[in-house]
Length: 354
Ligand SMILES: [Zn+2]
Image (cartoon, rainbow, N blue to C red):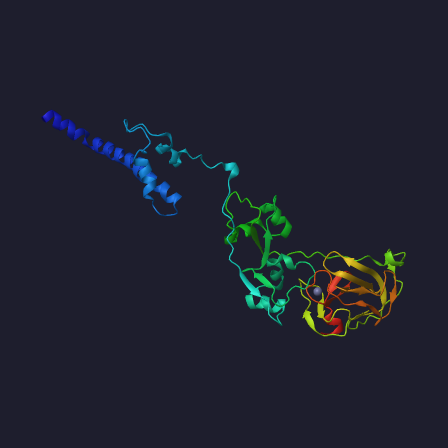
């Protein structure tokens, strides 16, 4: 007895460990695992059925041998240990989780005012709303704007986009894009198409359509390489329409002013010059007239319903050049009036007063 007692004393620790290990194995194999599978399958509710199918043989199974399971009842079928490990080549990280405030434009609001209200730059209104990046009747009453929480651009991820390509496109360090938490970017920083990445500090570039220059309408080249104008304007500008019903002013996202008035109203040449364009413009202006004033200035008249002039024609300040309309990217009869000086967009209000 003493000998058996000493053996027991020497090995009891091992027996206890082996016993616990067996217990853990049994609980893991037939206890916990089916519960976890059930939780995963039933959205948080532990299903009795999932457990019972694993512990009780199916009625159709051969019950003469309790170890003989019907093929579909094999416990290993639901064992997640057989699920292949995630393939690093198909790794998909978390998707961005943005939570943006929206703002519905009410009468009298300006982009600058809205931006100020949310503590962002006016450019960021454009950054959060790519649909505004072309000439349009944007910021009209009722327009729903996405307000970004920080200054930047909301980028729609296209196939092939990478963190590096975004960094190059917007001139913003990759670290800044990663550092913006809601982007949910984690190593290896793959961007997923159909998601949106906020690029902090970025400014959305505007596409600027350039009309034909004076050489296309009979201007002659001088020795300096510049084009000699057919006629030179007065350098002063008058209202292009008999209306002061402004629906949108000049800002980064809108390089002109919009004035509402009934369709078919007269449109006047704001200054003397040569018509360089009179026709359909695919970039949102609709029916458009452009007058080159020969002194670096050009004026644009958009969304027209009719033309009284053709390219190459000389017009004098106050001549009727066409009729107002609702063509192109427009949701109501209005004129879009733009003044450019040496191809740079300027605020027409500085010239004609608003
Ligand atoms: Zn406009």
